[in-house]
Image 1 (cartoon, rainbow, N blue to C red):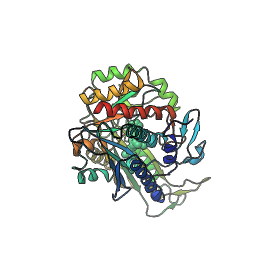
Image 2: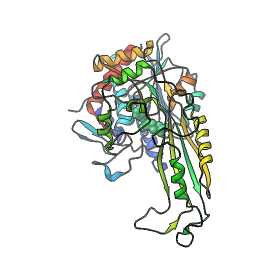
Image 3: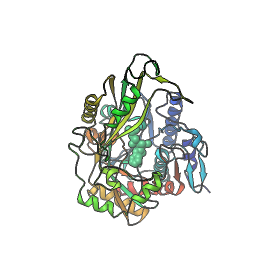
Image 4: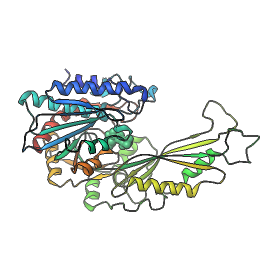
Length: 442
Ligand code: BES
Ligand code: ZN
């Protein structure tokens, strides 16, 4: 027997709401409309608010003066499912194997979002009310950097006034271990183009006489890091906050993470900034990552050509108190200073999001931990995460409130990758967590 609400999750998963894909625009909206139907079914008032991109679902219960107001955020958009041939079952047909639901979005973020929905539905059915004033804000552009949400918060600031934000879109350190995330890395994306000749050239006739953009982009990319893994961009580490002693201890107490990292990634060895453990590197140190590099001939066999241009796609993960706009300027300056001879550089800044940190020992943080204890038992892990949820710091800046990140994703959930999955037991735990959290926050 499926637990209550699971069928709703499966239906939600069948919408291929890939926000980055313009061909999936209607599917993405259809998912928002379906969610709107569900919130109305529970007795909440809701609507879709338009943005220049995908719509925002906004819903609320009847607000009563004197009660706490909780804004529940989630995202109904998902990452592209490609490469499709690496999925063991179809990417947008949820399939249950060994107690886990396999589907794009299963963990990130539909499984976690629908657990909240089911928690609300059950509370409303039983008590015809919630213990708090609730604002639901589900967006469809998180996976593309939430480009329209900060203006949305500014526009509807008064309507969105709340005491705190709650989100389930982060991880658990291990199955069954309640995990409170009190920090997220920020992000700053960019693409650099390296262009040489104005046309593709025969590499025999012209090779040796002009710079090859592919070679140039490879050299340029390699200048971003020192051989030991430290970022070589001047001033990159300016303002980076030290890791607190209690954090080092708390993270070390989670056990040796190296073996798990090797297992999860399949890499032959770990590698990263010297002087830090793997968790410290992922949760509290900034990086520059190369997400893609290309140029020249990519087809079968060989082709003797000098392509006229090449590119590299970069994303920097940032920690307090780095600023994404400042970082992009520094990265651009670095690239300009290191362009090899014979080519031109075009630097195209991309989307950004601020890093976030709150005090997990604050009254709000301890309330969240109590809720986790009710569902998962005494032992609660306090962590930061390496991933980004760009809007979280904007909640602080625009609405003036902190965000409680109580995630349900497992380390091997394969978010953003083929065979993304979410255990049914995490869905069930998430339903209880929603109820425990709202009760604690009330
Ligand atoms: N759910 C993730 C964020 C996340 C993942 C937090 C793992 C903590 C642990 C979210 O959907 C996501 O993938 N965010 C993107 C944001 C980017 C596209 C601006 C990310 O981190 O890459
Ligand atoms: Zn994601």
